[in-house]
Image (cartoon, rainbow, N blue to C red; front, side):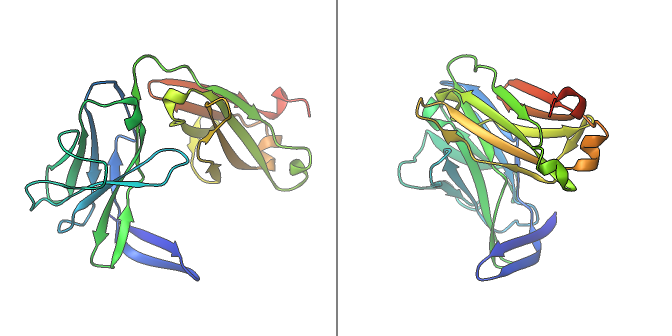
Length: 243
């Protein structure tokens, strides 16, 4: 699969024909002490390595390891080593990061990156969220706010979905998704990174920009927040609000 990669340097530069790196599943939830497996496909690239990075909310990415299918073992970043972290491959473009005997400190977003030599760019995957628990995670608390009166005077307005009281164990690694009339919406969505609060819980804010005409038609909008195997969702429509 090929796509278009845009980067902001001094101006917006777009490179077409770049490989698309995919990662699955998007979220992995495992119990403390178990093994986590995260898969990465490098798309059209079959002659470059997979590089893995770990990032906790609010932190900087840490280089975990580098693995090329022609090598016998991975090369590790500082603080990471075997047998805790290892990697294998199923083909020249399919790689897997394996984390053994996981601990709660392993909870993070793990990104897979490769080098596309055909267009001379580094390409990142979308990331896989790893959530390690020693028990059930609490259901996320979700509050959905309607557009402001001022917003509704224009042709476009914004809904706000606030996720709060995410436990410290969750590391704020929740997924926020939106629906309109039961159909998934991905455009005009902006979701902030998880923010740690003074009480060590996490909060996430997500924004959906809608057409004011859809609000006036009483379209139902839904915000769903997933955390591992638990989720919470809230619906909102014009007739359910008193503005």
